[in-house]
Image (cartoon, rainbow, N blue to C red; front, side, top):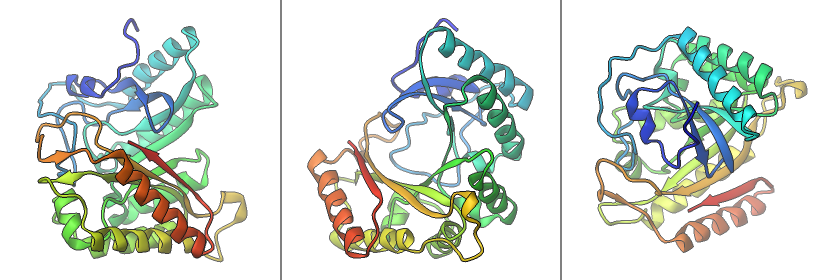
Length: 285
């Protein structure tokens, strides 16, 4: 590879299967995996989404993914660049792809061979949990091997803000119910985008409901039949992040002040401590 890691994800629109990117939440180089090189496919329609409209003729295949990932990791090794993670993200919701299980196995195998110190990450909006087969695939992968690190989106605590942030026909109550079930069985990282929509920040009642839900999830712990050797279950940490990249619907969604994110984080930390839960709450403006 001749190109260095990019600062944004615009290369996704060129139909690439694997793209090196500097990730603020990974704090270094992430090898992104895109299962949808032809067009965006997602169960959400978030107003802050950075994937611009595009259409390409490229077709995803596990064989092509294997070649591209090997090339990217070899390039990083040759350049002495540590790879922080191999991450499923790309042009939509990765678990919507019928090739996701095979791609996950392939990515884990190549990671183990070329970058064993890198995490294997899935950035997901959680809607795949509504499918029993996907639920079980993720549960097993999180228990390991391959010890999949699941970054699970939770942008809202109320139905109203969920509709603003996700604009999805999938019921919020059904989705959060499945998230509650999953967190009892497998470890996750909660990721929450905090931004203004149509010029308005999340209202106080939304912030309070979201905080209550996160504390509940973090305090739920593991089910009694989850083996300790699996790494347990529950919420590992919470990531609060702000809008930092351009989106096709700008300025529908806008960045909030860094101080707002810090205030929400401080409030959550206090609520977690009061509930007897000690987990990391990170802020990425």
